[in-house]
Amino acid sequence: MSSNVPLNELGEFLKKRRSELSPRTVGLPETGRPRRVAGLRREEVAQLANISTDYYTRLEQGRMQASAPVLDVLARVLHLGDDERGYLFQLAGKTTTRTRRRGRQKVQPQLQRVLDDLTATPALVQGRRGDILAWNSLAAALVTDFSRVPEKHRNYPRIQFTDPAMRTLYADWETSAKISVAQLRMEAAKYPEDPRLIELVGELSMRDKQFAQWWGEHHVASRTVGTKTLNHPVVGELVLDWDTLTANTDSDQHLTVWTAAPGSPTHERLRILASWAADQNLPASQPLT
Image (cartoon, rainbow, N blue to C red):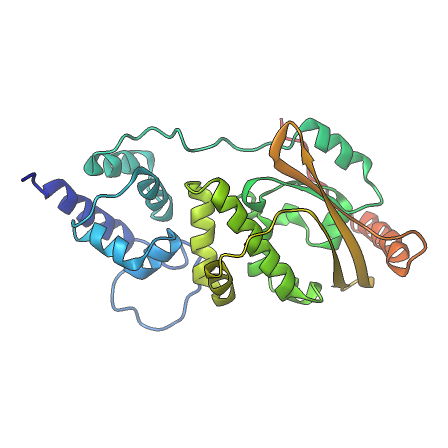
């Protein structure tokens, strides 16, 4: 029978690392109540990593082998440096190659050119997981100033669930949020071992009970077309049709545009919003080089 010493060491290493993190460090809300253990609880680490508490407990107790994708997510959740990550994989007897990690997405030049030409139509480009890759100034005026959102948090579902202003902007926030969750579910089926997606789901599940409930319902949806009503704080009610165009050069990049019928009240209010955005000097995204 093989020795369990490496697994025990792995468990102790995980326990030590989580004891050094605070909820605030990993983006969890502080409750103000006394904590019985230093750092993060086991269930918090498990939910952030989108694995069961029982599974994570067995890892810490040296009673289970961890897969490479799970180790990769735990390394991110526990904020491990490169050396610590390598040590974690070594204890688990796994290779430290990062073949599953995809590089940073950059907006496709063709989509960027289309975006640059859309001056009277709100539009943005989303990548994997709903990451916001590019936007025009009217999209910033319509939704939020994306330039003020840290790049690592510039993700549409995350903004939708964590920015309180979104719940008043959307006339039917719940339906729109459910669609975002269903779209994430579709992405998870396509890339089940994407560490950033797993981390995003874990974080939102911890922060929002509705997200956790809807994620557990396993509904799926593609990015297609639809209509949404927004209660904009500057121009009032906007009834917008949205459509999604997918880049042939990268099927994981989607240009979303919001339009209104010419002559409609919303069409006129978009013109007013565009003028307001120009006065506010709201920035569009800059092409990545």
